[in-house]
Length: 303
Image 1 (cartoon, helix red, strand yellow):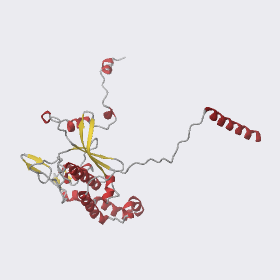
Image 2 (tube, helix red, strand yellow):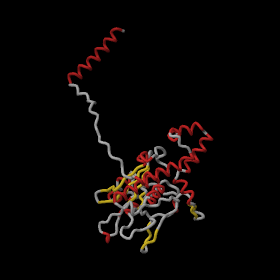
Image 3 (tube, rainbow, N blue to C red):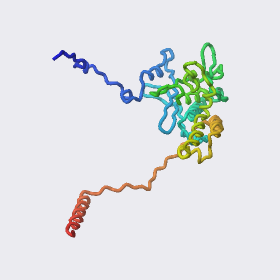
Image 4 (cartoon, helix red, strand yellow):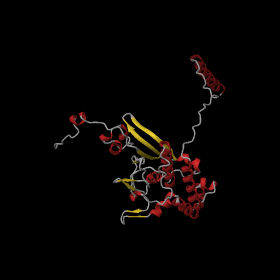
């Protein structure tokens, strides 16, 4: 029998170290997280703020967070289910909805910090990257105030693949247009061609206003009307067609800027009419079993 070297021997197993739980579950990229959270020592306890974007099966979630030793702290939160207040009740996961959610999170945070009037963001949406040079440093806002610097946050994508045209960058663009200083370029926006290194800002603008959704609506209506009526049931019930999407998203952007504050929480009132049945005693349980046995025996005797 040939000699086989044992690689995983006692020395290997005695030194084996289990990875962090969230790494084993595939939820956290700690290589990325360390670089997003670790701050320079000469900045003392100034936290690094992260613009966190996550997608579920039904909505987009945007948060501004920073890390402490005992866990993260959330400064501001917005998700796309809140867009119903501003007139958008359907399509809460697409690129245009991600843009609206990022815009809402940015405006809400700046209002909370008292920076909403200083940094109004980009009100004329053109799909281009907005950046300004100030004192030898690049800020991703239209104009830098001499007294108050813009609020800087770093994009946190989690374990999502950062492909060109990904919806995560829709939320990023919404937050940047909302007045946050988030470092980025146009290389991952829809409309960027890697081969020619050219960027089509009009294509990006079309995505922000739901143009791709309108095109698919028109295509599906011609090809399979039954599927169109089923898939776009919410749009049809509100009489929203492919040509109405741009006006719809424009009105949503304006409504968000007018009032980004969160809705008042409704007080929770439990339903006290429900009463749990009391436990039966041991004797009562035995009596129920005996009654069932007697009923079964009576049926057999009748047969």
